[in-house]
Length: 134
Image (cartoon, rainbow, N blue to C red):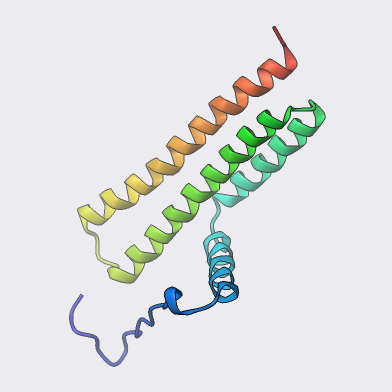
């Protein structure tokens, strides 16, 4: 990236260490909104999460099963937020094709895929056990 020109945006860092908890939470909730807005993957993740919650309620999942399922949902959504943050940083750094940037973005996508597959396996194990107990 060269020197900052007149047309380039100035980056204003957040000083989270010097602000109060309310402002920190405000920034975090803004981050969630920014991360979800315009991301098509949430059109899959959020309905799937709702389906998992509905099935857990319908099959009367135990407290431990609820905790595991909700943790899986949180892990997938968190991975997606990190991937979105990485994509935003990549767009800010350069619009030019760079194989290293492509690799970094692919690794971020792989993290989401890995979390999603793991969550699906855990969910399948829990729901299969609820449907066909031993």
